[in-house]
Length: 156
View 1 (cartoon, rainbow, N blue to C red):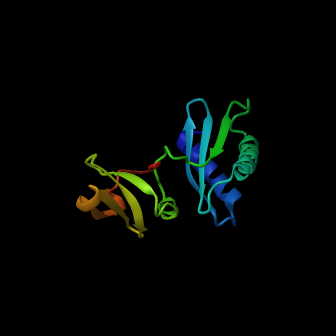
View 2 (cartoon, rainbow, N blue to C red):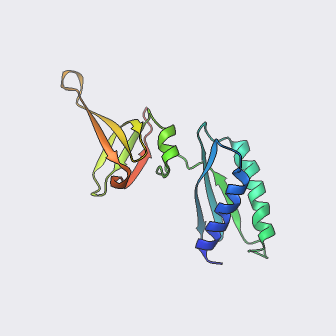
View 3 (spheres, helix red, strand yellow):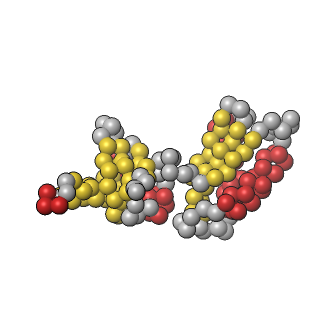
């Protein structure tokens, strides 16, 4: 099987496992050359370790039963995307309203600000420039088609 076919099949298994669960959703499936499957899940209310473990066990069993790797030479990781992964889905944007994000535009321009609004076709990021009396707040309306990447920023 090709990697694309494996990703499609694992995605289908995940849809079956998440059937009826309206909180959790599949973000991405990746396969490394060493047959290491990485499955990224997210949830509107946050991802629990216990849920990742139970999904990992059920998915591992489904992959074994499919017989793709008769020697058992594959590994599986199920986790949330984490802060180092860019946002990929509308639901991820929606759940992160109010957080600071860095948006990279197609021309590699970087924009940092607070994610204010998420619509069906874009977002509004509020950027603050300057301090005190010179403080200026700029609301940037960005279409998803004009966003190369968006990452959550940790602010201390």
